[in-house]
Image 1 (cartoon, rainbow, N blue to C red):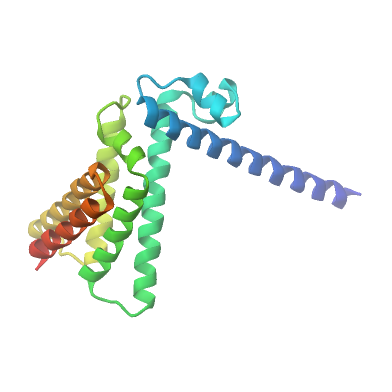
Image 2: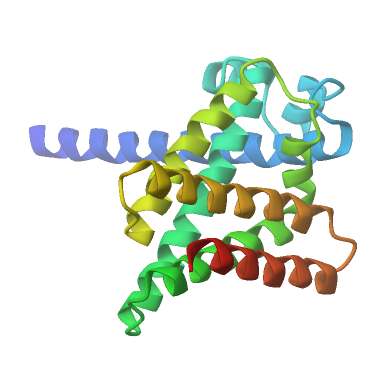
Length: 204
């Protein structure tokens, strides 16, 4: 009897976790649509929850408010970037690639590909209509990205090594913005090719 009760509790807990995850995902997806259409300032919480099929109370429960929802959306977007880049690099390594720059370029191409596919959302994050605290979060994430690139490239820990990684990380960041602003896939691909050339010039 106790065992059955325990199993029922576990099942209920799993269902509750799944429902919570689905609710959060729906709110994030709805927020992406509304922020793309209206920007942060003019985005309406009522519009977001209506599109998510949720409630204002649920939004505040999961995120705390519109600002926190925006920051969570950006964090989710960055996490997916990192996941895809890490997967692409791991796949290249498994295929036998060991050159740090080649691996960096593989990761960069994955980054640019995801940026192009989600360029409308990328523009939301770079066009300036963002909540207080966003730039601090962006800078913190940028420093972490520099650290990850330093490890991937096997850069030296001296001043020149740190600056080199910072410069090539900035090249990818700015190029990603240009990819999002590109009028066509062909134009975006030209940006990607130019970024690879610039990075090689700096590293080599």
